[in-house]
Image (cartoon, rainbow, N blue to C red; front, side):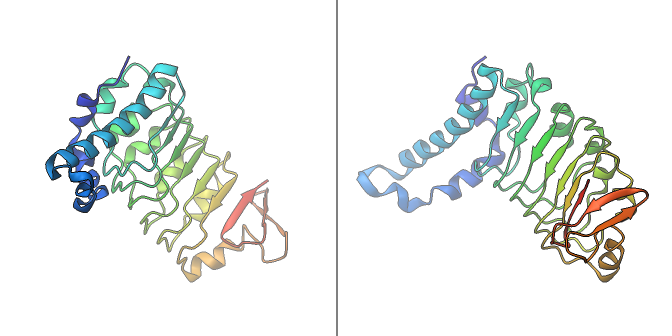
Length: 232
């Protein structure tokens, strides 16, 4: 299956970002008309997204990489062109875009994900459907706008790694995290954690260099950064 540029272009969510990506002054050199130049530039942006989708569909790859595409939303046209391969997608990268939300449709469509990278967007919450990602092992939500820890993640039994570095989180469900059997690491570096969280955190990560602590019979390793805990 080949992804047509016209089909992807019908997804209007990312076009304003494309226009911002190519300011008007880039269309004056060489004597190209402004309208024709903008159309050309936008066509090139559509082609980049379509090319990345084609690489996944045509090669039967288990990953979809749409990082650095200036997406404001996940293009709806992609759902249709990838409908026959979505169950085989285990890794999706949407890092460094302009996403403000993740839709329920995105989660339910790519329900077999093992790894999801949403680093460097403008997300502040996750849909409740996150709880259905039974195979998810790694999620990267660093450099977003979360004020509250996304507790949907604490229900995922297969989840091993949570990265929430550089958000705006003040409170953390320590008890729920400590009860997650598969969880190996939680990165909360560069978050304004409140004093209560700092105190509770000592039950998991000790202040001693390379210290060990026991939480419900489980050993945790403290690698020198009090915002990063790795369960052994």
